[in-house]
Length: 439
Image 1 (cartoon, rainbow, N blue to C red):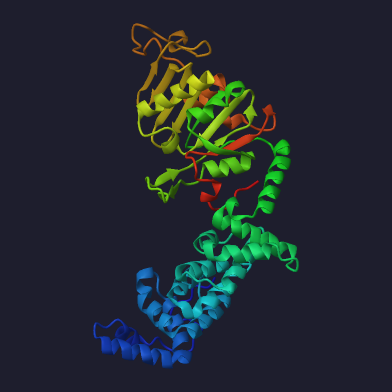
Image 2 (tube, rainbow, N blue to C red; image 1 turned 30 degrees about the vertical axis):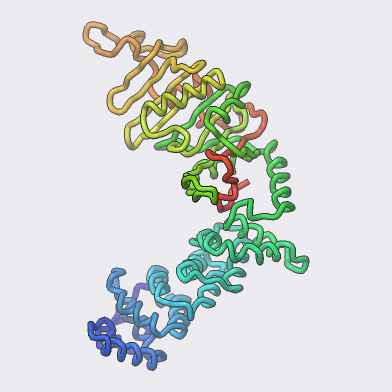
């Protein structure tokens, strides 16, 4: 993109600085007169406004230009887009100036949203979302962006959620329209899921997705959420894993691929309002239980909802889980904060745990596989103050001995069964979580 100075620009007229000053005047009459003059002179003023904006290097300096362009409306919008396409304004500047316009430009935003260019489309959806525009043009742009099957433009998912209640009947009708091209019907289905989750689909489409999941499961290479820099998970024996659903109070479980389970478990909580019968609003999250991996099932999800806020909650959770499943382990990593924790519990009691914030600490008897500090060749009991129970450091080392190292899960891992996606609260449904999940 070009970065011409305001004195070396392709626009024909000088910047109308006096009018811009009048627009910002504290005198309402003066400001209104300036706005009327700008609108009347749009054909000649807009190029000069754009030329002046090219020389601005900070968003705060664009305020008078935004006001002027917004007052002029559609002609200014068209001139801005034309200059953008000619590369006379940068992507950065175009994106900021496009925030100036009101409902008169709603269909123009929809035209941008339908563009195959990622950045252009994102600016269009940002405008539609800001205005809350419900239009056929906006709906068609939404369907088109999902039909392309590539990376979804910025704010398209937000727009689908914001307009979901209005768009849902029309998208469902489009989904069943025999005259609509297959790619358009696919786009309508993706827009429905983006706005309202799978519960936005009709029974026929939900059944089709469930069949597709079951087809994909036997052929996928297992993966788990990344714990690079930070992460947490729990592990239970595959033979007794069913107990975890009661232990963690999980609900509405559904078969899921690893790809979808990872994306869901790394997503945000949703806030569910109180029902008609009363009660309180609730925060709800999704939990991914992996397929059997080398004889173990791993659990991933929202830490605050599944575990709690403090050390006692952590201990209570892993002990409760082991009471239901016989064995359970807990692992927590935060490389940035310096935290590293692992616990092993059996039959409702933690038998060994390690925790490090600054100084490492161990509790419980060392496990048979641990490498003890006192057994190291250079250990000197006379001068070394290392505690006698000091053993294996860190969750990344312990997990491979206790159950499964998530970082080593891959093509060589022995896999049985399928994963589950469950919720942390009852009577909510997966439709409370809008957005698409990879299959």
